[in-house]
Image (cartoon, rainbow, N blue to C red; front, side, top):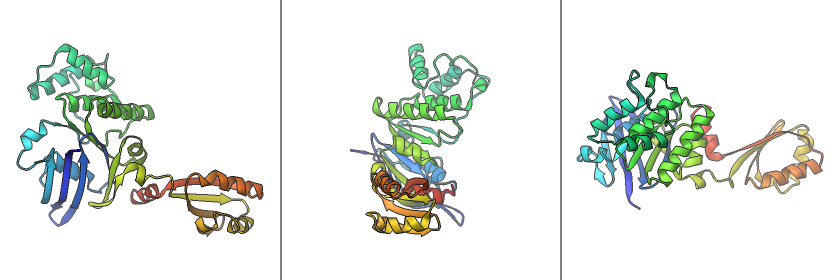
Length: 302
């Protein structure tokens, strides 16, 4: 599979501040790739370098196997993006805004093409309404229409679900999956919401303070076989005795008053609950997270 994006040792300094530090990752053509990190992690700086809005201090960025520094104009014809919030002329209609973007790309769109574009992003019937009447979610949809108008091979989305209500997040998720599965688009999806990346991405990278902290396949990184399970009980002294005699004794990592912490697979949880119930141990609460989820919550201070 060919490479759509390749970063090798990419660094960006702003005077004495290192915003991005020797970053390496690759997005394969046809992939939906998650790009995660907390505020201040270097995500937006990295995306701006990929879009050639700013230059790296050092390192190499290639899109479609070509150097971004040497072939910017040709490469950018294959790329569509939403960086931060999309911006439009509020006094114009959605269709009038799209006509301006089509003209900028030297495209001669037909009425049928505009209809298809607005249908795809879920704005059919609202294309003649002024953008200033649009909700935040509708403006996000229009931003995606803008990114798609020249039929790019690669779409870069920077926090596209910020400010969306739950239905808007679901609609955006389905649109991204449609663009990938039915239209064959490669998508770099930047977010700070791990659950959304888990829903739609096949691979991911997490950065913090400008450095890669973890990367790989989403299914492997968010495996259900290596969970941190927290169990809170009513009678901890009795529970401790019962658990020390159980099959889960070796999986226990810590005990703090009423709280027990285990490392185990998801399939073990119902069996342990049944065991505790049989021994009349009252359970106040039980929850679990993947270790990557725990780590991500820590670095995002959530």
